[in-house]
Image (cartoon, rainbow, N blue to C red; front, side, top):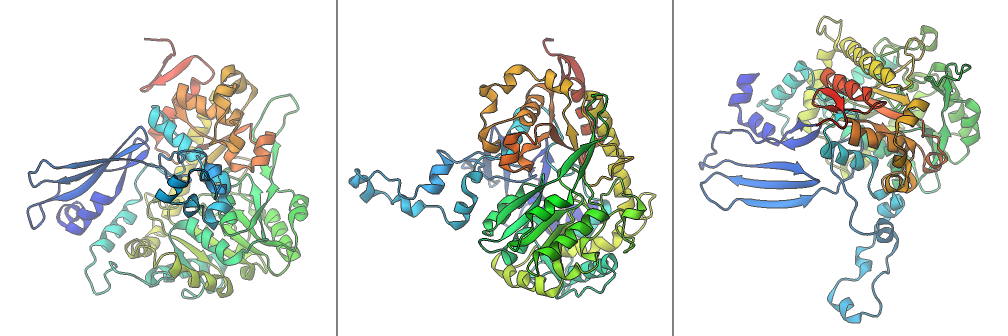
Length: 589
């Protein structure tokens, strides 16, 4: 592979533009390229510092007129990596005031565009004030300003498996007549949809039509967006199990729908002796029944679940299926299954369906009796192959639900990257083969995450957090929803709960509660970054304190990062801080 990288201009050009991880954030790294035909090499580099991106346009023709432009990154992101800041001024006013010009200043009105010309469009109005700073922009900033072990964002900080990288290289340099460097079929590259249909036919134990029951999208987020856009109209309601991945809420609003929250209930293991323990998140059927109505257009199910790591059991899924029938023929389940290959603690065998063995521990909701025709299954390659930047997702379902997505796709983008789709089509068969001493790559992946989960879990428990007991509680994905104990509350300096810190526009309702305060303090003072739980709850529940006791911690990180974080966590209940790789007294020189 090295010779290919050194000698092929297509791959060299790809690498110049490809993002490389640098201190937990993305930067472009210029490479030493051979000169182009005219003797010049033109490429771009970006350097991020203090929320400012400096763009350097370099032309090595010997001239001294290099350009330097500074821009501020204002783009929000979810579980990603950015340095977003809110737009200047009052976001709410910008979104709601379409008549805000000074009526007395007629001269100014004549010389400048009316504010009506800058009024927000329908999509922005539907989002409302939720277009301001977010937990991701705020904690992204903290990760840049402080030297932290970053257990925040949900992306692996290692390379994809060799066979996936090799598939990408081979697809990139393919110069045959079928070379994947042009547009492909909008609904999905033929080679990829055939691979996906083959796999899901095994998962569902039914024949999946690759051309009519599969749609390929730019990541799972776009798949969810398209599902909601094709299903929901103003006045429709969409059920969310709370806590939930925060992207869902705004995507429902963008489609004109109304989120309806069904709280999952946290049940501690045993607190008879007053000890704060870990526990399980359960779905109480009556709470779902109370939320269902004739207005219910969809239920979003995410199993394994972000942020809690919950794996919905068979009994809970059957209750959801019954609720779908109760709601009426209009109700559909959108089943987000991006973590299906990461069930690191499997449910008991009696809680599993006998359908397929392709995803041990996972239940495909669409495989339940009568649910194929009522379900769109959403997934992607990013989490499974540690390649979140590939951005290939898909929808699987009956043609009457997938066909509208096919119809909408050309108006969103012509197609997902043909090269990446072809690379994934070549990757999928390889993943079923023996890998690193395991029967398949998927077995290796689960074992890897199980070990990382235990490594992080040990550090969290030693620091005083309560976490799930995975010998008794099924778990999936790569997050631990850790519980804040009273001793950790006492360790948090009192001033951190004062107005100087708690007034924060990025927090729900503009108020940083215990979970946020603890995470911010740990990032600024203790050298470890985790994510507060409040953004995963509805604003009302967060303001009531439902999220106060929990933080989300990612273990999709290198052992070195997890070990560094574990050291930093040991200083949370003391005056010690992590400097380099050592814990030292906070007042030490």
